Amino acid sequence: MNPVLSDLLNAPSPDQVSQVISHSIAPSFLLGAVAGFVSLLSSRLNGILDRIRDLNTLPENEHAMSHLRADLPRLRRRARLVNRAIFYAVISGVVATLLVIFSFISAFFGRQHVLGAGFLFLVALSLLAAALIILAVEVRIALNEFDEFDHHAVGLDPGSSDPRLR
Image (cartoon, rainbow, N blue to C red; front, side, top):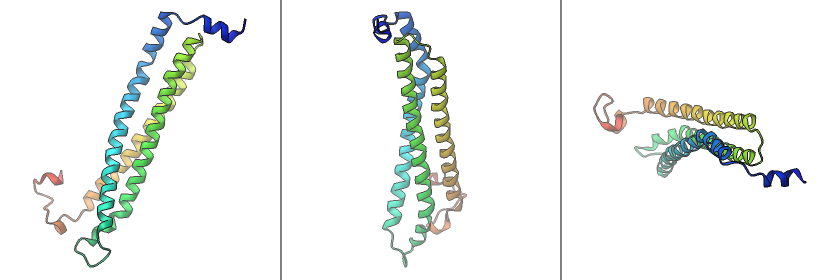
């Protein structure tokens, strides 16, 4: 008999399926974390893009707020970083999904999946770590941007308790 057909006829036992489900819990939590992280990154990107659009509507010269256009290169850099972080986070989610699929297919065919699953989980976590590091770089740029912001030019006192400065 064909080995693939034989494997299909010998479906995994309920205990094997239960074990695969319990092994899929960590990748499933990782998928949930990635989904929340991508949502956060998308919100940051939308805020940056809105700011870019606002600054692009300002006249080039001879306007009281034209000097704010000097921030456009930094905002574009931040947008590129957040976009890259989103890419790595989404790929991390795809790899985690492949891990769950791989685990179930391995169990269905009665194959060991420990090495493959461990490798895929390591790749997914590494991609998520890369996305987190890129976010840290972007946040640092954003905070430096705030430090260099000319508070007095827009009538804000940096020592005030104004919530816009928090």
